[in-house]
Length: 361
Image (cartoon, rainbow, N blue to C red; front, side, top):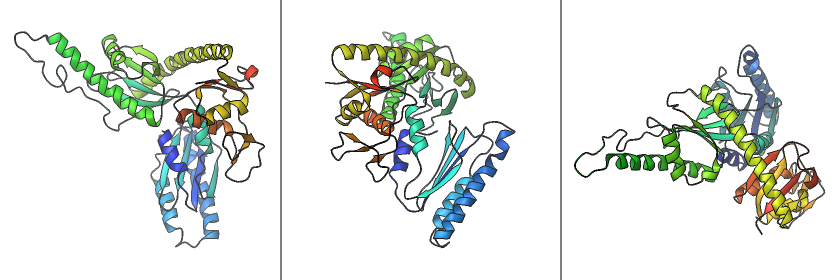
């Protein structure tokens, strides 16, 4: 599933020609049966255009990378969309939890605008399932969960009371020893999530029995990042079943956090610590003063950025200063400076011209 680190890596690549294939896909049959045909037709069109400009030898590596990506797609297990990115030295396939328009691009850079929009505005979160054998971590979009299997996950408790025996003997408090071992175990999980959040901070839904939930909250490095707790033993619960439970829990927790953000904005207005409208908010974000950004989900704004980076100018559509959507750039700036971002339905922020911020000073 798409992550911020992967997207930034794609955006940083410049190599002409770079091919982007974007196509809608389906999770179930019979709709999914035609997905491969749509993608292969787009690839054929892209290669036709490519070979009209370059000799086969010049683009052999690009073509090989693209054809390899297509051959490795698991057509039985797609999501809502598929993105294939191929250049001479890069080949990346990403399953997308949202629909895209079928098209191809050949340019110096990969076509990532749809991905940026979704990464910034789609409801993404993580799910942590606390258990001794093992504690599992998932990345989620709506009710769709994909297990995170990079180290140290899945995490197995190998300390006292887990894979190893509890110590015995006179004067040893077995209960205290077991509890301390559990704290250390769940601290490892908390620290691993903190490391992931430095690259791509996402809200967290935590599953577990009361005892494990209490230990994790005690050792968590960022308890405010937890949006919901789901009580119960789910060591062997499937990802699909976890998704059915985590999505409503996430929605309820997110609603409360958005409500709190509006309350905080009202207080900031009274204290004259806010910015309203795209121009003011952009300036605050460029100066790294946005503590909290509040924006309506469908709000987009085309503009050019002035040389000082602080002001927005009328949109020209030409050059590096032209932004197809200044809102997405603004969101990236706020997240990069450690701020929070909350999204609201259309009309919620009418008095602030659809976008507002709580500023640090």
